[in-house]
Every structure is written in structure tokens, then in C-alpha cells.
Length: 182
Image (cartoon, rainbow, N blue to C red):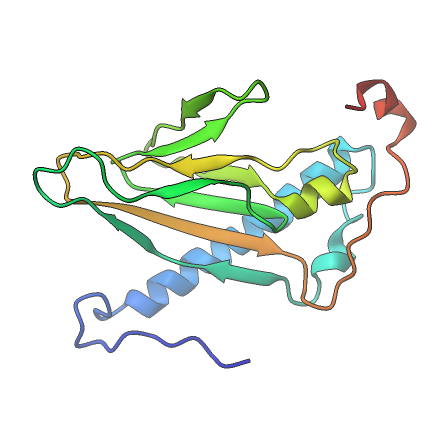
């Protein structure tokens, strides 16, 4: 595996402090991912550290900055089709331009409006597998529309088990949850 490639500091995006800022955000999101997994374990009636072995010592994280362009005069622009993420959790920071939609169980799509300081959390297919369908992956899409800005910025962080982890479905749901089973 090769180390991350960082933009040159002479590039606009590689401005002084860019790498340090990104690394600080990744560290914060990594801590949030670990805390969320502990909360999910407790919600399933398990010990908080029940999933730790899947992630330690190094979770497989992916972080990217996605920019969706919308040229002036256009009313509809590129986005991302309906899908669910393959991993365990996705933590998403989005700009004020919106466009993210989530699908409700009945099939209806609803907007996930951006809010200052809000972090969007999507459950992935690996979470659905691990919990035997108790927690479902979040179907979502991006519908980019013209806005005052010519582009939309989205920063997804994917929190996944370490690359050599074997993810098996839970043997059973705790008895306290069996009546809730889908």
C-alpha cells in the first residue's frame, strides 16, 4: 500500500495547512466511527467493545472530497445514482448546496438538508450483514440541482473493518431484540 498523495502546496487546493487540516478531520471522524460502533453494540444488547476486534489495530478508512459541478444556466447537473455503501458506516460532511436524498423503507425519497455542524451517518451493507438485517444499509443518492454556487462539495468518510477482518453475521440477536426482528 502506498502513502497518500497530497497536492503540492503551490496548488490552490494544496494551500499551506491543507494536509494538517484534513488529517485532523480524519482523526476526529475516526474517533466518531469508533464511538458509533460502541453505541451500536450497546443498542444490540452487547458489550460496548463487541465489535472492536473488527477494527483494531487499524480500521480501513477511506476519505475523499467530491465536487459536483453545475455550469451556469443548467437546472440539473451530475450527481450519484441510488446506491448503498458497501462498508460499515459512512460519515458525511456536505456543503450548504444540498442534493443528498435518502430512501425511506416504502421507497419514497426524501431530502437530507444540510445543516451547519451536522454530520450525516449512513449504515452500510456490511452493517446489514453483521446484524443479520436488524440494521439496514441506507439507500441514498445525490441529485445535483442548480444553486447559487456552480458546484456542490461532499466529503464522505468510510469507516470499515481492518482489511484482514472476517465479518460474519451475528449468531443471533439478543433475546431482548427478537420481538423487533425484521
